[in-house]
Amino acid sequence: MKRLNVLFAFGLGLSSPTLVAAQPLLSPPPPLQQQGLPALQLGRTCPELQTAIRSAVGGQASAWSISVVDARGQLLADVNGSTPRIPASNQKLISTAFALDRLGPDFRLKTQLLRHSDGSLEIVGEGDPDLSIAEMQKFAMVVLGQGGSRGEQPGSGPIRLMVREEPPQRWWPSDWHPADRSYAYGAPITRLALTSNALHMAVQNPAARLQRVLDTSVRQQGGSLQMVMVNPEQRQQAMSREDQDPVVLHSEDSAPMHALLSLANTESHNFTAEVLMREAADDWDVGRASMANTQWMQQQGLPIQGMRIRDGSGLSRANRVTSRTIAALLLRMGRHPLASYYQASMAIAGQRGTLRYLYRGTPLQGRFWGKTGTLSGVRSISGILDTATGPRYVSMISNGGSAPNSVMGRVLRATQSLSRCLSLSASVSQPAVPG
Image (cartoon, rainbow, N blue to C red; front, side, top):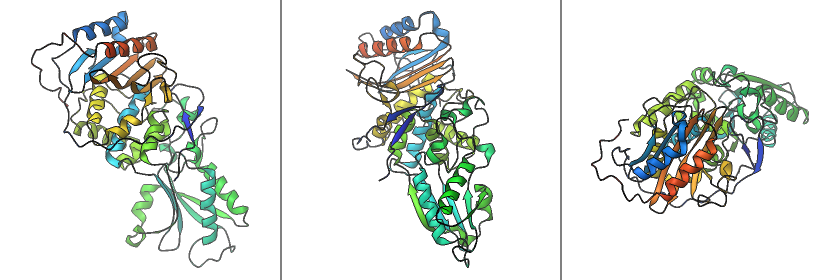
């Protein structure tokens, strides 16, 4: 079984990637049964927690959105929770939930060599983030053995190979900052991406790199290759009915979805999050995929007022989401049949992923599963806090606040220590926040 050998910790806004050893794949408990769509409820707050959070943000309240929800959907504390803000990598919580629900925990991205009814050869892919040079060399050897189109003999001339790939104008979301595109964390999003289209920096022309690898492998065996790039949409439209069922000559599968989710959430791998959103939407146009993700959120009965999805990773500064939306999503996924996989994909305070160095030696260590987010001027953290009275779904987004890590730590500790709110309002809850 293929496994991710290296996880790339591409923190948003960092100038270079950090390589870390791959975390072992967790074995989640059996999935829960569907429990119906939860709804975020207003009206029953915890005064002590609200006061503690207000104290934590101090005079910076205008820069923060914070929401804390309990397992019943009660909004226990809220500071500007309905204000849309730039979420940075907290956007991945949205795209990975969408992908897990649509595709399931065992889904694998496929890269395949096809032979069509006319004998033509074609490589197609789905964006496997762990596609290696060694695997692509295997494809080259199979291509060489086939000798090209029907009727040709191996060695009689260049082997014509079609490569189904997105056009260059789709390699990056249009609103990603040009400077980000040069770094590994801003690598282009393509269907055939050797090592996630990243070395020490982003590979600017992944199609040319792919051609070099294939051509070199074929030439080393005495053959020659003519690679032709084809647009996926145009290719699909042009294929005749008999072409719809080609022969698979060779296939390489990605790691399973639950490992891809961990790469996206635990290590904040942008490329993986982008691919998962596109695959869940079954559309590699980022605009249409973003719309499909938005529609999915609405179908879950979540409060999406002010939400704007522009990519799957959070690198776009045009994304907008409220802390109430994210807290409600965490609550929804907590009752999902695949809840255990979703939670297992997150970093853990003081133990692994982007939270490995935070909150060590505190009561939060090993008790908070979350997703961090960082852009210049933006800091976010959202996740599931284990408390003495059950889980708390917490979302915090800062756009322009100072010392955000300190504020976040104080909010999490207050939520943990005040989980049993003795003066919880007994007033009747208001209707669910509309979706």
